[in-house]
Image 1 (cartoon, each protein chain N blue to C red):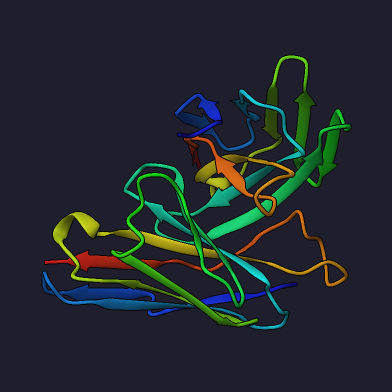
Image 2 (image 1 turned 180 degrees about the vertical axis):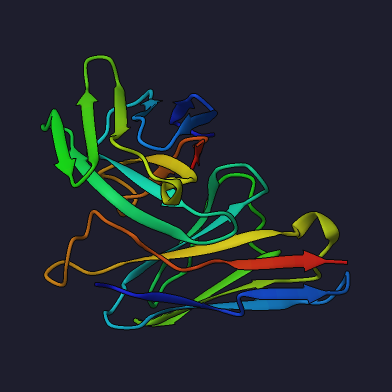
Length: 119
Length: 112
């Protein structure tokens, strides 16, 4: 099956630093990747849709200058949380959707998530 | 805003019993998917049901979809302690690159 990895799995940082999270599709090319945020005991909230080679589409209320997304290749998307603050502490999950002809495009394959703790 | 609303928010049952979780949504959908998430872990895709389907089975899982009521249910039969997890429904839409909108989730605890 399709595998999506995330790195790191857990990061602790000081307030004010920037943190980069990587999302990789390991055995398929992903033209579209999605970034979600999940607070404890809550559901996933879509932050942005990342398309390879173009600018990401951010959901309402998500600051694009705060959460920088780069989808430079068909297997890698990165989310950078800039100048992180304690309220940014959350579980960040990415998902990837294979292009047409390479599997089910109506299913997203999820990474294991990255837990960010900002002190 | 989240489209899907799930109930119950939490469910506790004994091993061997069946667990039923419900999901309601508001706008039209292309498909509805159910996911499972163990505490602090990523999501595992369980089952997808399309808008023109009414029922689907996968092992001990049974999903129904009623588009007239804009609702779906997930039934887990003969539950096991290992089924303890959070279960989310997500609605898929034709637009926006088939974006998924997640419900609030049901936390299921199966006691041995």
